[in-house]
Length: 89
Image (tube, rainbow, N blue to C red):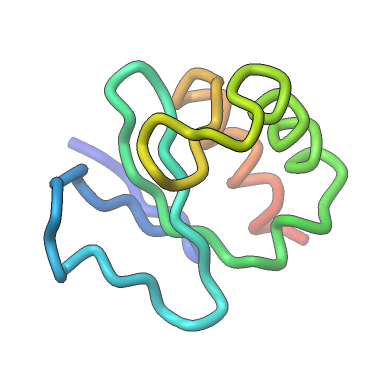
């Protein structure tokens, strides 16, 4: 059972799939121990709470992310909490 937040899309991680295309105005990020893929609005990048996550990613990975995309080093539930708060703005 799951839930859906407007403005954020969760996609099961698959390697080399055309279904992984990201719509214009969105960004794919990988989150959590299982590296779940989320597609988020690029507007999140300007939000202070999301910039904290970006700084953590930079500290942990630099500019070499293991998934090839942006990897956010936090628990999935923490990411979903931040994303749900950003959706309310």
